Image (tube, rainbow, N blue to C red; front, top):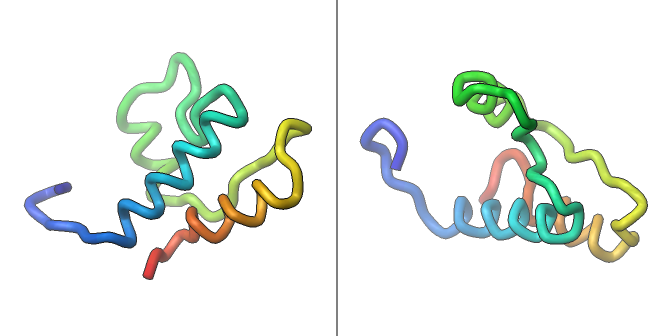
Amino acid sequence: MDGGQTYGKPVDVWAVGFMMYEMIAGHHALWQKGEDKQQYKQKAHNFTKLRYGRRFNKLSQNLIEKLCHPKPS
């Protein structure tokens, strides 16, 4: 819940995609050391696409892209 709004299954699926990204990459997709909560929220709000490194194969990239679509539905 954010600001009193409820969320459903699409948001849970989106979160699973971000957790998968973090497990493969070894770091959070949006948050960087030294950033405050406001900077993180701004990044999350403006999120469009993840950056992938060498640890990601095409299959994992494809799955995470589908799970982390900016407008889950």
